[in-house]
Image 1 (cartoon, one colour):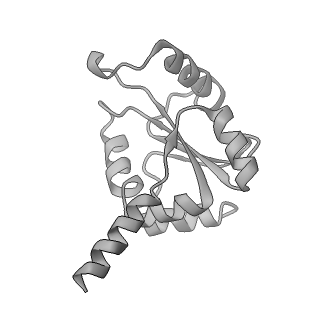
Image 2: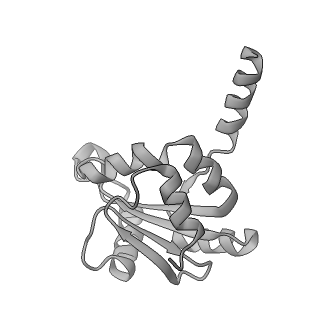
Length: 143
């Protein structure tokens, strides 16, 4: 029984989705795989709700499993600490995303996009209290 648990845990870690940092790359992947895009604006080293969202939803097995099957993930991070600063090229990409999708500067802001980058749904703040609640919202974007 212990062996099965270890094997299952190992397998689940293999399906963990990767957070991209380039929306154009995400659009290409979303079109090829017929998936939606989840774009998250975060302040990973200063925004307490962003950190709670990361730990409470994005890092859970429930979300990872759903995302691996249904989503292409994109993170636009805006760290403030000098040691966490992004490369200038990445800062420029994130600034362009912020200009297009997050002009008010909300953190965290999470958007569900179609493969062309059109907004289907958006959540300002923590979008749900549990991973399964958030998955339900992602599964039914019209609600």
